[in-house]
Image 1 (cartoon, rainbow, N blue to C red):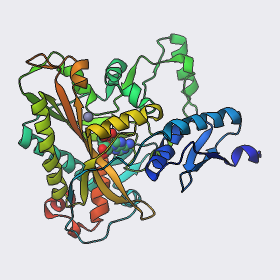
Image 2 (image 1 turned 180 degrees about the vertical axis):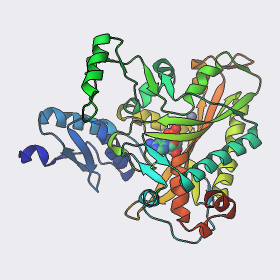
Image 3 (image 1 turned 90 degrees about the vertical axis):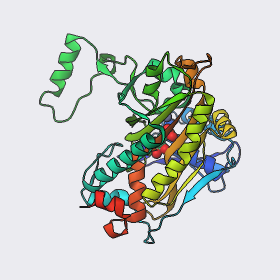
Image 4 (image 1 turned 90 degrees about the horizontal axis):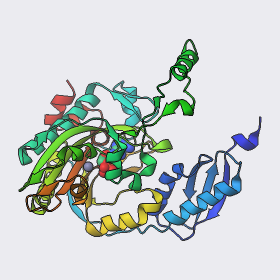
Length: 403
Ligand code: AMP
Ligand code: ZN
């Protein structure tokens, strides 16, 4: 056995400048996208150096050069933006938080983790997921008379490009590949899999990508459908979107999936209309958190943009206060508390209005905004905060989840 290649090799590297915990966390998360030869990069506690954990020691100089360039752009990020908290809810349940809910739900047979960022669920997990989705839909109907809709899970690359996704999150895109329309290539693929023990993928030159992608943000497929609309005030749409983000080796349980569900609200119209809908969304989130009796905070936030665009866009988001996040505390497998983002409230200015020809009746590009609630993360949070004993759950929820 060649231990040199199987034992992970660690190489220390100086940070171009000292980073704080927040930037260190982003570096560690994004480090799975640096090189196929790198397993991950771990930042030292003082933020002054890092350890590059290698899977493969070939071309070491080139790989380390890439790691250094990645660290260089990531360390330019400014963090420590002033965080504004809009509200905080406190639960009435006095029982302890339940740790490692992901494993607990699997043990109870309510959750199946395929191990690749996809999950199946049933029983109380399914009932809770449905209730979160339905309760949010009900609030949007009541408050805004939002129109129900359905949108596809595939999105074409022209739409994603217009939405700016390739520029902001190029690492997270999933392209659809199809067999070339070629009798011999299709037959070769069939024959290779006929009676074979495992699946055989076709060679890359037998697969074509025509630009269809799995949709990575719930609201994107809505904008092309609004082309040509002219608003005197505005309109709200709501639906359950299936969302896909390639998270590479960062996938974990219900909190970081490749495929997940989002209850989406999109609002479009004049500046006044969009601001008003956004402002009225804050107490709705509070109402949702109180209904499930959970500790929760709504605060300003920034998106985890990919390395090279991160610094500038984060600064813009923080300065304009265009993104707010619903943060809910959960416990990980070691019992450590982390605040996970269970939803976001976003203002997009006239970005989508301009790109998709949506206007107000005065001829200005329409303003848009959205609220996205990550259903599986809410499920994780509610089970963490109430555990498995139905008596601890709020009555209105208990009777719908456990029977
Ligand atoms: P965003 O559009 O990035 O604000 O995402 C909307 C919501 O989707 C987030 O607030 C999360 O609740 C949820 N979400 C994002 N990424 C994931 C993921 N990889 N796995 C599960 N939920 C996610
Ligand atoms: Zn959205």
